[in-house]
Length: 78
Image (tube, rainbow, N blue to C red; front, top):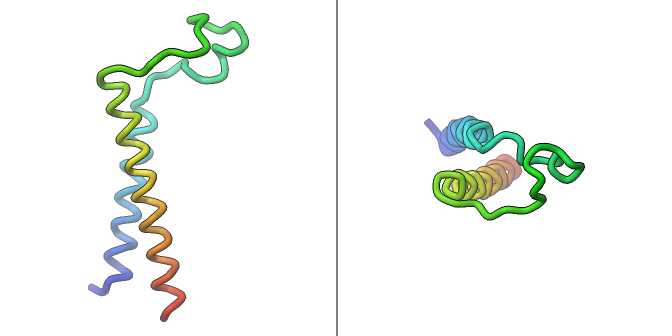
């Protein structure tokens, strides 16, 4: 297995992890609260597991982008 195949496999794994992390985050905290939806708060701080999921999704997004750039650079060289 060459490096390009390994990076592609990592990219697929990171995309699945990112999708799962985004779907696990709390529902109903989107734009609906800005227009008088349920909850009535426009801002609240994240705590506990919600903060952990948020930080993990940001970290996995950064790894996803860096890995995508590495794949692009490797493809351009070959």
